[in-house]
Image (tube, rainbow, N blue to C red; front, side, top):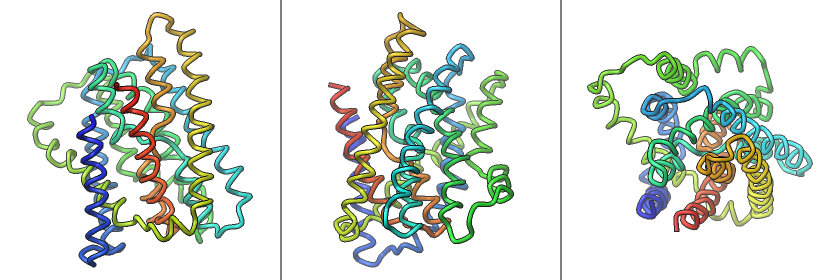
Length: 301
């Protein structure tokens, strides 16, 4: 796990370096973000959710995932609405607190620590988390964009959004017990495995240390809110989980850890697509990856 975290930071650094030498530009980053959304991320979702057996008895974890993501987002919207900053900056700051990065960042840790049982539990939690990111996340992005919020636009986006389509298909396949030939996974595995690389590279391209230094008060506030509320929600959900499944220690640990995972990559992707403030989003993704990495390293010791 330590090696994987180090590799993530190395790829972010590579993206930043390639931008500094003008090999990549933010226009290239926008192209990479579309490649992630339309190709690699849907395959990651399909692969992850169909690789474990989801259980209806664990639907309380899905509810917990939605509750955690929704609660953190509400606090973000209230706090950042009071900032004297451009709407696009407030929008990206709010997006960085909309949901948690589990599929890319935390799934490998759960599988390493607790094998497929841990991965199943985290996937169930992530179902609720992802629903908030895909629905309310895009709504927030529209609200702060120059186009403004439109229910029709949100609905059109949702029914044509590749990650959500993949998510729905994966759930149907899982709960209907449809058997996917191993040859299919062999075909999509090389493409889905590129998702983490492309994601970290895109973060590096949009990383701007000068901008982060200038707007450090915004990032500091966002980080403080994210982890203070995330930890509080995580502790509450941990307690509720111990009441619901008193003999299952893994479930309670999963909900606690998941609540303090990094900013989702989609906050950066949405910021790019809706022309908000991707540099702030990229900075928040990087900072939270550092903090959450330390948390995982501490838990794994």
